[in-house]
Picture 1 (cartoon, rainbow, N blue to C red):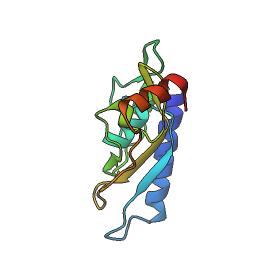
Picture 2 (cartoon, one colour):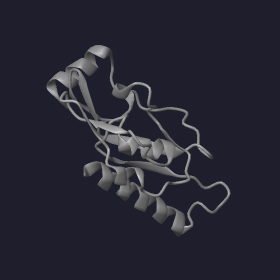
Picture 3 (cartoon, rainbow, N blue to C red):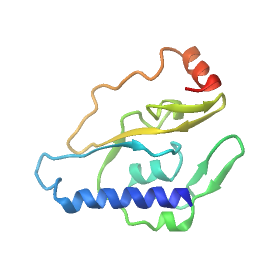
Picture 4 (tube, one colour):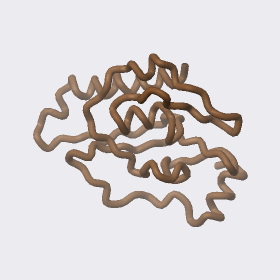
Length: 142
């Protein structure tokens, strides 16, 4: 499944960073950015937020409902970073730098995460000028 593949890719990338030794210095940290095509409730966000994908995680795409994340995604080796989304997880419309979709549904494309052990987010780009602007983007597309 796409969920499993994305989580495996993230695990491989994070493990590669760890093996490269770039986080061995006392003040080194990590910023992870990419086009992960995921929702705030899905496997990618869960893996990045919690270090692993909890059982029962679901992927919700479009208005048709959601599907269970495969057990194999929940079994992917955990990471040890303390990653936080620059955009937070509280409002799915504000979770991603590039929301797309239509009114009532929001797909999340570009993510920016950082390791909160040594970094603190002090500012982020305002995504939209107003609620009306967001509605127009989601109605007409980007």
